[in-house]
Length: 227
Image (cartoon, rainbow, N blue to C red; front, side, top):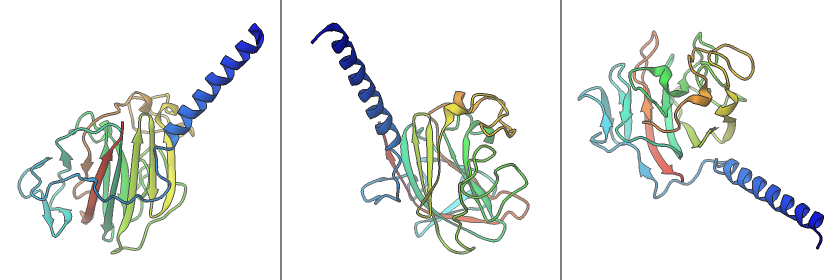
């Protein structure tokens, strides 16, 4: 084998390794709702592992519901993970699942996967969206009173959502390169580019929100941490 052939072989091996790494990264997000047997319950039945005040949330018969506007935060921070949960809305319910928060006092310091009965006035404020940043590819919401299913995957810079059996987004936050601007050219409220957001932080469930202050019920909230 001459030097040119050896160089070509090395280049081929490096390209194959790069594509294998990319495929591994993208494959971390499941393409269907996973079986969560053996996964970790995100919130203890007594909410002892949550940052909350007594009376803010009620956890009974496996169902969580807010009593006021306070967000329910995990005490633990999570980086790469698959989060699986179910939720049910009432008429005009408005809530969300916060991930990778760097400041639990500031809702814009986290990404919020919208939980909504319809849509608020904000850009990308509909259910299944990353609030103000990324809309879902389709509306998969079930009618008021029926349980919906989310599987949220965070793997390094990628965030993906399976919503009632369909993947509705799988995005790379590194494509959000500018503050106050989404990759599609629309403006957002984030004073810092999402590529610069942290990749680790607590998970939160937003409390009663919006004009109606309508409840959202959550259940089967389980997580599998990824390397």
